[in-house]
Image (tube, rainbow over all chains, first blue to last red):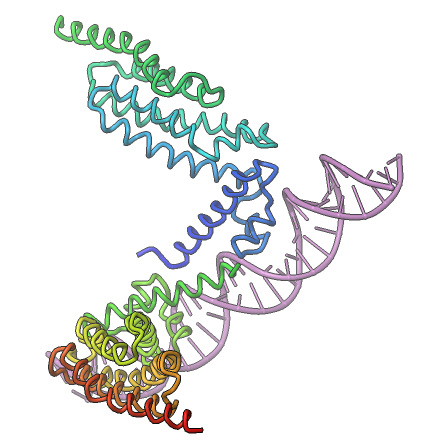
Length: 203
Length: 203
DNA sequence: TCCCGATGTCAAGTACTCGGACAGAGCGTC
DNA sequence: GACGCTCTGTCCGAGTACTTGACATCGGGA
């Protein structure tokens, strides 16, 4: 059993993040007030600083939590597709749809103080990149073990960067982007797969 | 906004009560261990003592919370009936059904250490009596203002004592008891109402 | 009889929070 | 440009609640 104190600490953190996220959604980075977050949560301002260090730390924590949720959702989209190409398409589409609907991302891109927020989005992008590498990479390795790890990594990397770009600067609808990416990348994957297989059967 | 500390304190209390109630249901009064309640909640034994004083205090608190829930449920049953007699019948039946299903009451009546537990039930009975007086009394006053307050009180009192008796020593099915009580008491109420009205019209 | 488990009490230690105060930066107003 | 205002970030003393370990006590069972 986790101690009550531990659970309370986690809950405090969560509630602070809730309040902060709400504030960011409503008013962007500038609309995020430390004192307001504290007041809303029913806690002293100092406690917020104890928990997150400074305003930037708080914002990062908000983004980290949201990222985690984002990835969980995208992951299920991938898991539903046995074929990696389909998984790629599904993941891309899902990610773009989620991003389009996400109030936090909207706020980061449109609200005042968006310079900081979008910088955060970029930082987050790096994290998403790494985390998604792990997930997506595992998926490819599992279903297409014949594709060399390095090539799978390259492919995932390209896809992710394109997706993030589309999130920051929206373009065609999600499905179109997903199809495009799948179309562009699938030859690479299938070729690599074929090479690996022929090489293996040759030896 | 209530302070986070307040909410945490309430939550702690609630979780302690959850653990205690579970223990009582499983093993009766003797099965309730202070140390076990503390361990389950992830808190020190001392904290349990700080919160409830002693074992009896803890048990009382469990009973108080359950009583409150019980009354809320019964109250809605009353509120659905505009006619006090129907309300009486509905409340009695609901109370007996709830009591029959309630694991805590079952434990109090059957588990070892039931002497303390049933004593508690009696103590609780007093509280239920008082609280229910207020609620039921208000209901009667609202819908049959012509019935003297004193008579309404008497009526509610009799009904409650009979109900509690039926909980402690179960007899006929709830509906039968409810009908019986309604049949026995309704003449009293209607007569009192009639008297009050005629007296008023006379003056 | 002795041991064991449980209740209940106590004191000291620890961690966290609160409240208030302060300096500094940014921003609009006069 | 000086001023006032708001918000950030930091510091510290006081208060509060939880923890830990110890102890006395009581009742049941080997």
